Image (tube, rainbow, N blue to C red; front, side):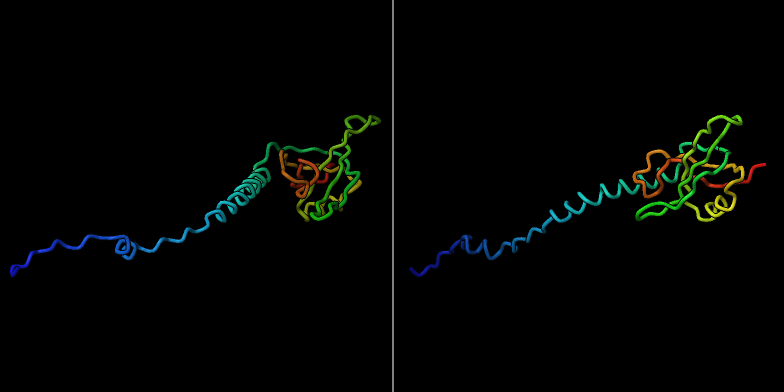
Length: 147
């Protein structure tokens, strides 16, 4: 036969498809990211909570009396811890006010005026996550010698 027949284009077989398909992408291990988030998010929340409890005060006030104990305490985080004896009437049992001082200049001022009547201005910070910032929730911000 002299006449040539037109043949349709060749059909694709699996070898052709395999050569045309892009190489499969390697799956990144996303579990590392999830594990990092599993640890970082709680740590970030604890840090944020601690910062907020130390930044915003629940209450503030002033107490006056005689400082009967004042010492720098703590295993790792050293803070000044003290007791203020507040007597309403002479001869009565004093009420003890436990307080924490984080500022060195205020601590020095209290130390210099031990034995004298002192007025302590404090801020109350409730819910501080660790005792590293102080053993009490009352943080003294200033001290003035009373008359």
